[in-house]
Length: 410
Image (cartoon, rainbow, N blue to C red; front, side):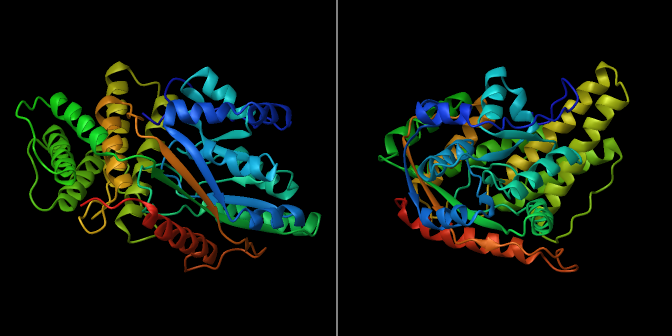
């Protein structure tokens, strides 16, 4: 559950000295963590010279990576090591509440919290100040959340460009310097054939579902069969029956159903979105549900039956967001790759078991794009911010190219 209901939000600032990140880099501590917990065993940083140019120029630097795995923030430590410059990063409040050591490590490495369920002025001001000071680059993930879909971007949040433009205005007034954005593509590649691992993991899921008959299907078809079974289970859980139509149609119908139920119970109405895109609308509605739950939990002093209902509302919102992370056609025969199959299996494992198997070693490619200078003027009204367009186009171009380095399945 991503909404923290154990205690009210309290901003956690970053550790600003260089001793802790220097210690962590020197002894390769996050390298060990990535190998052990995420299966990321090697890396390749590309086009680092563009970042070095911005560092040498003294610019305020915002690094804007795609966000497909929990490993992404730590993977960004490798370009920091190669350029010998530590970084700051904005991290969701719930990450500071998993374990005391996680909170300790994130903060010491330069992470600071942001409250996703409502406005967080302290987090915004901290991010803006970091860019104005230009002591270290700042990492902001414009997708907001992770989704294990390496080759497809989620809709980008406009908060990233709001922070960048505000910092550009302040920096221009105070020191006369610039703020730039470097889109960063992170791509994970499998370092070994996945067939044995994938069939074994799918068999574990099938056994968990109670299937007794051995499945003798090609890997791609077997993966899709399990994915359809899991969708059917969710449909029966929330709607009482399996849906009709294609998998994308059934997915969207279930998302609509669970969100409508939560909205009706909370009496929030359907949250408005600035885009006609279905994914944008779902994101706005999920955030509105989470925000309302958090508000009622800490303001209304609910009794235990109401708390159970509120937890159910959050779980439904989380499930809707999880369902949205299965994009259309991701495992089509003409485009499926080994990394896409691994991502899908691991996403299903997280849904069922709460944890993904990391037995497939991964190689991480981190590629930086040319700097996008941030104008001091406010974003134009009535159209999408050109900065968002530039970040998205750059990320899509890099990820589209990097996806060709994965092995085809078929």
